[in-house]
Amino acid sequence: MMICLSCTESTLKADLELIRTNKDFIDAVEIRADFLSPDEYSLLPELPSSAGVPCILTFRLPADGGMDSILSAAGRAGVMTGALRGGWAYVDIEDDADPETHRELIKTASENGTRVIRSFHDFSGVPENLVQRMIDNSDADRCIPKAAVMPKCSGDFIRLAEAFQSLSAYRANSMGYSCTGGPFLSDYILVGMGAFGFPSRIMAAAWGGMLTFASAGKTTAAPGHISPRQMVCDYNFKNITAKTDVFGIIGNPVMHTKSPMLHNEAMRKNRIDAVYLPFETDDPASILDNSELLNLKGLSVTIPHKQKVMGLAYGLDEAVEKIGACNTLVKKDGWFGYNTDWKGFLKPIETEKLGGERALVVGAGGASRAVVYALLSIGMEVTIVNRTAEKAAALAADFGCIGGGMDLLPRSGRPAGRASGFSLVVQTTSAGMEPDIDQNPLPGFDFTGVRIVYDIIYAPDETRFLAEARAAGCRTINGFPMLKAQAQEQFRLFTGCEME
Ligand code: ATR
Image (tube, rainbow, N blue to C red; front, side, top):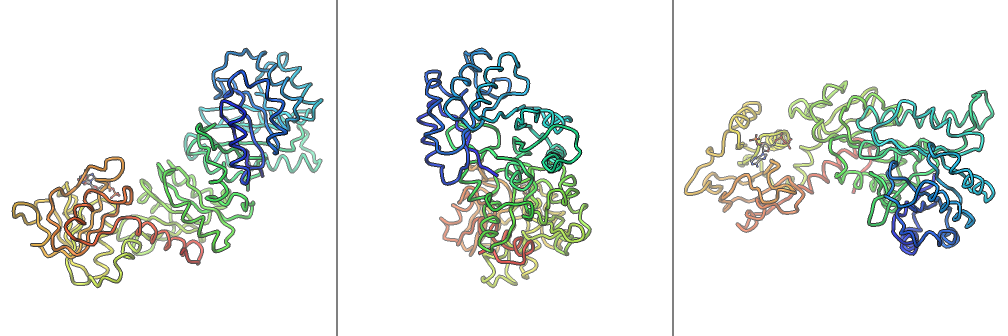
């Protein structure tokens, strides 16, 4: 399975520089001629010998996601025909390109030993006839069919995974000379664009495509491309096979998450044949129900699915029931749900001997529930305050502690930490998180005398809330140690091994 760097610079010199800096991670390159300035076209024949890896020549039309060009379709075909004498391994021609206009190009490809990739693009979804159209494109000339489609939901993503499966099965049959009766299929390229399609860019290594595309320049060639270095270093791409166990995170949105880096590094260090992927998910059931197809063994769960997945598991641990949120699913006979957030939260304060002392929790959402559960488990006396008093009161009633609006805090000019004797103050709301870093859920709070102030936000490193606490002399903790510790706990549940 090849990693193909898609080059989208305006000069071939710049493309070659990109190839040079990525050479350790790539097996092929695609030159997107539609990004080149026209005075570069005459240099195209020299490119393959300078690149040193198999090259694909693509001159994408605007309708298929290409750049605007002053050339007509015939002019474009002429440029590509002229380039092919330079020893290009592949040339990409859209399956709806006019045969008459492209006759000379296809003939020249055949004379030069250049294989034709017959491609089509669908930015509106995953078409019903995806597999059949690809098989039809794999015609007697032994073209390589390629499709780039845009899954718009988890259901589309599953249909894409099934398309890989069908194409690989068809290929195995047609290669083995069996009775498919249809066109011969040797290789195929299938691409899932966008966030919903992203896992297919990595899983193509297991599912059977010929190559996967990556970008490294200033412009990303297609939605969802990552760099070849990320493919290899962050996703262990070169070690993925059909036997590789799959783990991941389901959420919406999820592409920003750092979890794949943490888990994949730990998989590598523990020599476990597994990969961890971000699954943008609008419908968790469609991912969970297809665990066999995806070879899924475990999932992290994030916003907004932590409640919804509880109804999809055959069993839940006690903390999940009490907190009312599940952030970890492990595939056993069915899916079993855990919550590792509360253990992760306790990790940075586990040596502090806080039992019997008073804690103030700011916020009364899902994250707050895990924090309150954790603090009660170590014997702290908990007070919850929230912008919406009723939510804090309801949460407090659930856990048998004190809760209400901000007015619950004693005021002597400003709400006081010291007067209330809080040893620990925990910020659990989203206020102050990037990009709204100026927000503070408890402006003017008097932190003097509070021993530890803990904000579960990790971006930015230091929220305004935490900066004020530090200025008042408190020990401060941000959300990164919690993120790391809950991932360590998940990794233990997933693999039985330790994440450093
Ligand atoms: P999560 O699962 O991350 O906890 P949530 O369940 O939506 O998310 O809860 C968000 C929490 O952040 C709530 O306590 C919310 O306060 P309200 O209940 O009053 O909505 C709190 N929150 C969000 N933005 C806030 C802000 N700007 N100031 C104060 N509290 C805020």
